[in-house]
Image (tube, rainbow, N blue to C red; front, side):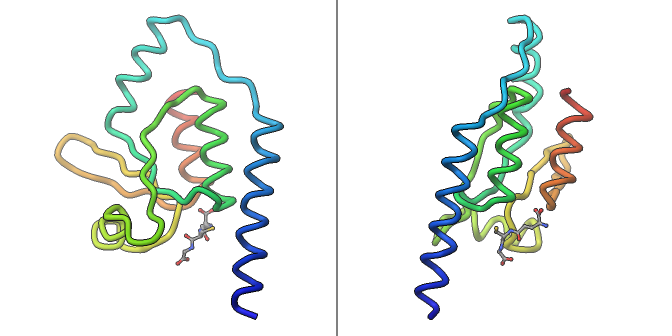
Length: 123
Ligand SMILES: N[C@@H](CCC(=O)N[C@@H](CS)C(=O)NCC(=O)O)C(=O)O
């Protein structure tokens, strides 16, 4: 039963990835200079995430639409990022956006909060 649920969840995750890939939104177009500035500005961001998690797919889709090549860090299995997320962020829940602000680090959970934050900063 547990195995069946796992297979179902993973199958659904793969299906969501396929549908996302087929229906990808267009990337925001910027001048080369504006894009270079954005790419500079996202250096302090990283997304802790899982490949087939629907909330992570939704967040990566928004990143794609906003043309934000933010570094992604997998928290699957025994990845060191998983431990980092638990100990520094406070919970193992994906997605989570790590935001470095000067010498402070903010951990933003909730896909809809992350997307709103990215839209406010970069849309
Ligand atoms: N409301 C959250 C849901 C996130 C969520 O449930 N993520 C799952 C993966 S699909 C997770 O990290 N589960 C691990 C856990 O809860 O321990 C969001 O929109 O980001």
